[in-house]
Length: 113
Length: 112
Image (cartoon, helix red, strand yellow):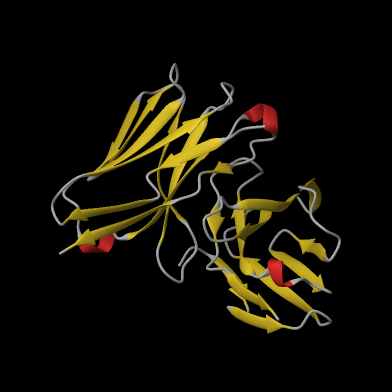
């Protein structure tokens, strides 16, 4: 089955700096890659996603890039703010596995004011 | 909020107890999921229901029993749990299986 690895497990940045979280996947059939943000005491919430037919997607301060050849995708947060502090999860899914979401282990991001 | 409500938010139970977790979604979705979230581990998919039919059971022990009476409600019945079952149990829903999933806030379960 699919194996998703996520790095780093923890990340601290100064407010205003950029943060990058990277994920790799093993199944070349994976074609959908969502990113979730989980704040303390809440469930994961989708913040951005990308499909395999595009290489990059942006939404204000958040962007995701996908390299299908290398089988890795990354989340980029620019101009970080304290409210960006949370745990971020990447996931991958493929239609040949029933579109099951395979999640990474999460990255705990702390933005220092 | 996400439109997915889970109750209770916290639950403490002994190993001989029987309890149930409830999930309700107000999004008009047709697929619902149970996940287990443990520290330092990826979210573990437990069960999937698509149009009220169970489509996934990822080798979950029989002490966890799901029930989906309709597309809006999902239950997880618990009995004779073990301390290692302590975790955050998350419910999610999507339009159909495989679409974007929306999560509830979870039930924090502690088994003593």
